[in-house]
Length: 95
Image (cartoon, rainbow, N blue to C red; front, side, top):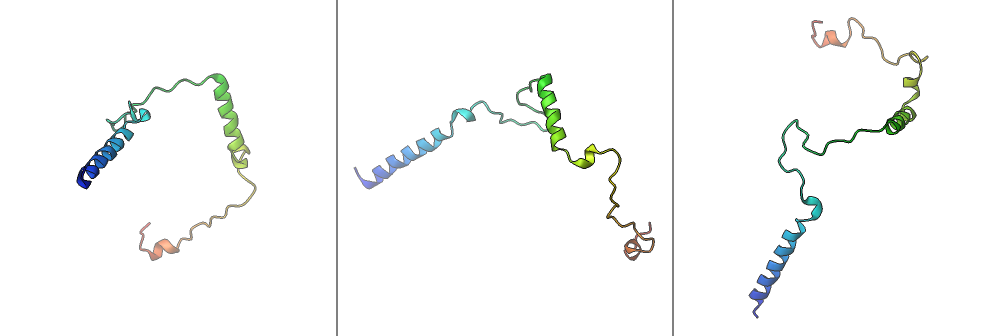
């Protein structure tokens, strides 16, 4: 065999291996024709009442103290109120 024939055979084997690697089982049957605004996947299963309760509890644990308290916080706001002749007048804003 000559060197060119060896390289041709090795090239064909490498190309075959690359093509077969793209045919993995998890790649088969997936959606390739997408439609904007349309979900084409599997339908979701409905959650049981126990799962819904667990999700509600997790959301309560993850929330912060501000959302659980009644009314606003006791701290004053850090935001300054705009002054009538402030920056917007310098920018030429008519309002």
